[in-house]
Length: 348
Image 1 (cartoon, rainbow, N blue to C red):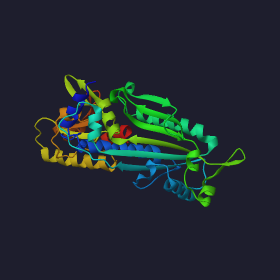
Image 2: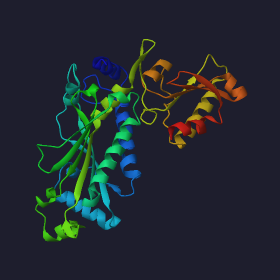
Image 3: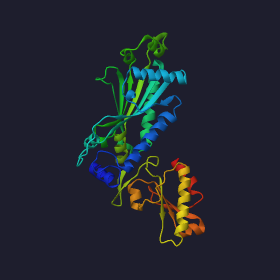
Image 4: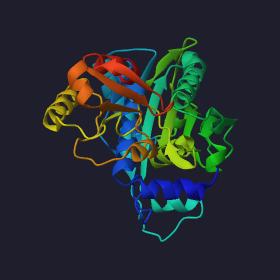
């Protein structure tokens, strides 16, 4: 895949700024979508997980992290494992550049945000928990991909990190050596190395094989900007000599747009219908392209919008609109009263 073509497409269609030092409007929206999906998967759907403030604490193993876990345990009670999630911005001097020739140039120019997940688990459950996390995270990435072949996993015993027992990296041949997520399991000795007072030590210790032991710590860290680049690379392809983005429906900045066909004679009524349908989509938490946005059909495809709704004079007369899928480019006839419920099955 030609990385330069992907970058040029993203600049042209407002996913990436012309100076490559930040994401543009649609790139920011895609980044927010990925962040929301990550929270939904790791926090909302996990009864033993808490989202904490955006602080750098979860980027490092220290006394503050231990205190966070102990405070969380006092709120949630004892359980086999407990997870803390956070989103942190890494201080970095992002810089505008004239051109990029490789992914490393782009990543160097962009800001850096981490999605952090730390799980404290008892020694008896550490293997099961680590395997479960690997499967969950692998499935999470693959569920949004158009080209699963671009996703790969590597496993290694970390030789350079004293307390790391095993490390799993998720990456892509399209991104070279860069990994967009790293999973680690830390030996209990990592806590023994901290300067913990006796009260904290006692609270942290768990029973294992009739002895007191420190728990195991399992971490996951996602490089968010790199994840955005990965999903854009995965979604990019050429159809009929036109470049398009086939972003997953849950990640597309806008899921639905409206097109008024032909030269309607009842434009005021059609505009009222558009506003009413747009409001219904918003109430169903489906993102709709603003009615004032002058996007063409080609631009909607290029920017990854999954569905378009076609309205015309006949829609007012018969109640039938056209529903077009970006992926198939086919249009079906649907009654206007059924469109929202139909798309909710695919988008919510």
